[in-house]
Image 1: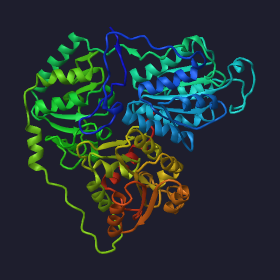
Image 2 (image 1 turned 135 degrees about the vertical axis):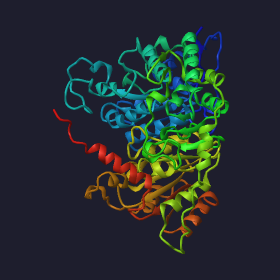
Image 3 (image 1 turned 90 degrees about the horizontal axis):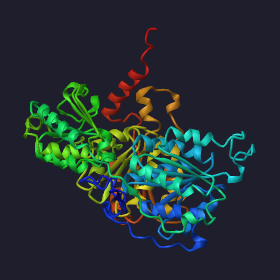
Image 4 (image 1 turned 90 degrees about the vertical axis):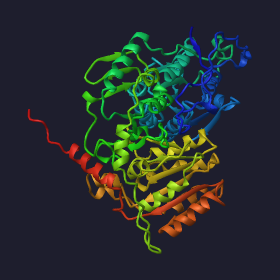
Amino acid sequence: MDTKIGSLDTCKPPCSDLASPPNGAVSTIQSSVPATPLVNPSESTLGRHLARRLVQIGATDVFSVPGDFNLTLLDHLIAEPGLNLIGCCNELNAGYAADGYARSRGVGACVVTFTVGGLSVLNAIAGAYSENLPLICIVGGPNSNDYGTNRILHHTIGLPDFSQELRCFQTVTCYQAVVNNLEDAHELIDTAVSTALKESKPVYISVACNLPAIPHPTFSREPVPFSLSPKLSNEMGLEAAVEAAAEFLNKAVKPVLVAGPKMRVAKACNAFVELADACGYAVAVMPSAKGLVPEHHPHFIGTYWGAVSTAFFSVGYSLLLKKEKAVILQPDRVVIANGPAFGCVLMKDFLKALSKRLKSNTTAYENYHRIYVPEGQPPKCEPKEPLRVNVLFQHIQKMLSSETAVIAETGDSWFNCQKLKLPKGCGYEFQMQYGSIGWSVGATLGYAQSVPEKRVIACIGDGSFQVTAQDVSTMLRCGQKTIIFLINNGGYTIEVEIHDGPYNVIKNWNYTGLVDAIHNGEGKCWTTKVFCEEELIEAIENATGPKKDCLCFIEVLVHKDDTSKELLEWGSRVSAANSRPPNPQ
């Protein structure tokens, strides 16, 4: 029997709301599907069906940029009572917003126009693909009558070939649907949306601009909630994998659990904690999994990031994970040391079963605890001393609670935010794998829209902010109450530490003045500049007190060489990797 999914079943970590479905719901499993009501014939259109599907799966906010090929479709999205269409300043930010939204809600969606919009949003879709996020990218395409006519259309590169955009999306989406006739539109749309949910990857849907408003019999009923076959473990393979892993791990002297980002797509966060509770192993996270594991867990020891790991991490500063000493899990595969390997074994099933077979072993945590020295506090600032970055993050740490979420931009904020201790329920996101600078502005917009009950704290460098700053405007239009710390150190600091040059110095902006101009008296916004700790304390008191209902933009001016030691180490290693000479031929 198939499983009827009424809302997306996503991983809800015990420490945060990351990737939780709407309202924290889980999928409803029913044995029968009731008949769906008929739709008014004049409303049985492609546009309405697509709008209803988006609402059904939890994408109740859709990020868009209008263009002449998608305007009729946008009319139908606006007409859907359960859907909120959010206009963004550019397509790249619309894609980033859908990315941020999907991290919290479990699925996101954006709508752009043909080619000029599609190729603009492509970078954001690639990032979502790298992070295993289900994202529905909808493009308004040419009139269905223009396909195969050899015509050259506007918004193209001047060739009578409409497939350029499609070919670009093929490598960064798991399914592509070009809807240019109504006969198979229902099937194509539903297959695309369901594939995004099953594969946890972006999909591409192109809809001919003349089709959204035309009634068709295939849309005559309300869309039936998706019936997706549940993924099941091979029971014999699961038992064999658990037996082999238990034998391997029960012989280990100092075993450690290291959580990775695939736990999100595998919906295995709770199972991981269940295993950690049962076995007593020390618990660490890879940087890209921060926020997926509760950091208040009694055996949590920090972040494993190779050479820039948390201090006193038990595997040291330079060792990589040795395959012959590891059990490595993929969402549906288990590999024990150099073999054996077991396929068709779901990560969450494996972790739950393994928790019942492992002997308790607290040796690694005890060794860690024995040598651990609590991190020191930054030296106390002299009165009016120029603000240091470590002092800034000391104060950001005090702001965190179950009612906040942190968005960390690519750059030194990666490293500084990694050192934050997340309290129970505090959200956390950053784009580790793809690392596109500017991602955080759009992602903050999308994440904050998906969880309005949380106060989002975004840490963004000046160089990254210059890439995508416009959509602070959309945050204001949406009435968001985000706190943005704009860290102004005069350039692309992360690039400086990899390879310095004059190209890493950027034109300084009056950032608070820019945001004030964007605000323009519409919406609630408060800005300030801080140069020292006293001004920072006052700014945070204002942002969390009298200005708590405003979007708060705090520009923090720091020295250009004030970077984390982790960035210095990481930058030198990236530089060495990038500058390796060609292998001898």
